[in-house]
Image 1 (cartoon, rainbow over the protein chains, first blue to last red):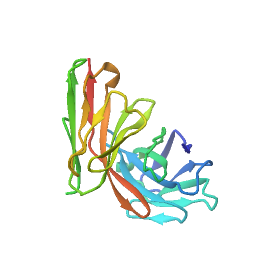
Image 2 (cartoon, helix red, strand yellow):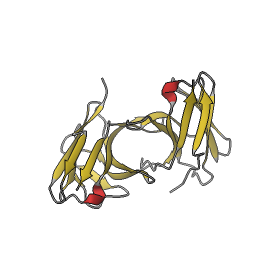
Image 3 (cartoon, rainbow over the protein chains, first blue to last red):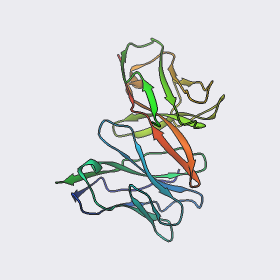
Image 4 (cartoon, each protein chain N blue to C red):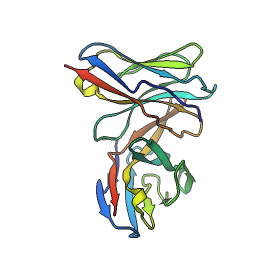
Amino acid sequence: DAKTTQPNSMESNEEEPVHLPCNHSTISGTDYIHWYRQLPSQGPEYVIHGLTSNVNNRMASLAIAEDRKSSTLILHRATLRDAAVYYCILVDAGNMLTFGGGTRLMVKP
Amino acid sequence: EAQVTQNPRYLITVTGKKLTVTCSQNMNHEYMSWYRQDPGLGLRQIYYSMNVEVTDKGDVPEGYKVSRKEKRNFPLILESPSPNQTSLYFCASSSWTGGSYEQYFGPGTRLTVT
């Protein structure tokens, strides 16, 4: 299975943008890049996904490198409620999600 | 409200006593799956179902059974639970969006087997 590499933790100040990086150098041509987050004591929550082009939705933006070997999740204005573990996951046609360690985002007021 | 529900949320049981964790979704999704989450191991898929009466093994299926008799329900069955199945369990259902599946997770079931 293609793997992803993320920093263990990151800190941000409230109301500032946050850029969460993810490396996936072994990505295959058909893998989609998904991001999920898990707030304390809750189930994972879908954030965004993309294949090649940058994507935007109400929660975040996803910037995908041209060679697709890395991507960045962008939270435009971090709030305290965005403190969570963020997972970058490659999803193939079988739809199996393989969660790695993720990045623990801490947001300071 | 679109949601995935699981019951029970917390369960303490003894080795060998059969149990079932229920999962239900109200979004008419075809794809459903079960995961377990353990410290240091992340989430691992146990079983998944592409549609009614269609199920398949995930990464860690040993000791578990599932059934999919109706689209909305996907129960997880532990015929003879053992302490190594103590874990946090999540059910998820998926919708097809933008060329891939978007998964919705339930609130989790914390199971302790003594």
